[in-house]
Length: 347
Image 1 (cartoon, rainbow, N blue to C red):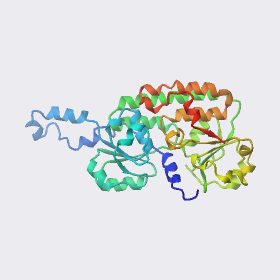
Image 2: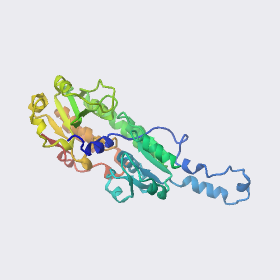
Image 3: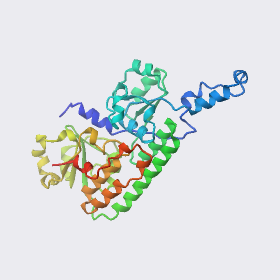
């Protein structure tokens, strides 16, 4: 599996989002430089000037999203119709599949991007170099940072601000925070805190460290991340250290399914492997843990149910009665109670 391009895709999905206020960079900022001062000669000589200014301020920015998580967040705050370009990895919700593809996680078709004339290009951390190239072409680019689980709420608010949907973003942010608070109350009832190894990629072995939103997911679901003392987002992890940590359960990427190494030493010596406590994420389009978006609510219900079987039903109810659906695009939250668990695979 070494060198598999799916690794780039998987890592690209483990990022996304940003923080600020409407006043610092509001939805009409892309148009602000074109507005002349109200008392300028041109405004005095133009009776329709005030009306034109009002029309400009009410215009929603046209946005290109070069990260799947940003695309989902934009749809969650009601800005789907403003997206005019996406990356080749943006596949959710399904309505975005017909939007013009302008790049990947590491590159962009700058000529195509220029022809689209977006008011804003949204990227995520890890794409700083690409953002620099876009800015050099005189386009407005914003890098959305995401290193903690709670950043998802902040990012919903920020994306709402950037897209001109401040109220929707603020409401979604508040409701997401409430969901995390409700989860905390449920997890307090847990009988244990299992040691968890989250495998980002098996060869070379990579995991989720303290500086990743995945770490926040594990701990919020009542687990102990065996790599939680590594202050790196997605560090390399030696097999020797994995053996020493001897996790209670292991979460593996979809691409690791049916791989022979799980039956070989030292993997087959691990407690989690021997006790059949290895779980595989589903394919990219059904994965609800790897992208920092509203769908992690469903992913966390599944993960928490694995950590604490005694709380499984309560967690399922918690995720099914999510309050973010009213603000978000309803298609972002699977409705069928059983459809979620069915896409996850147990070894």
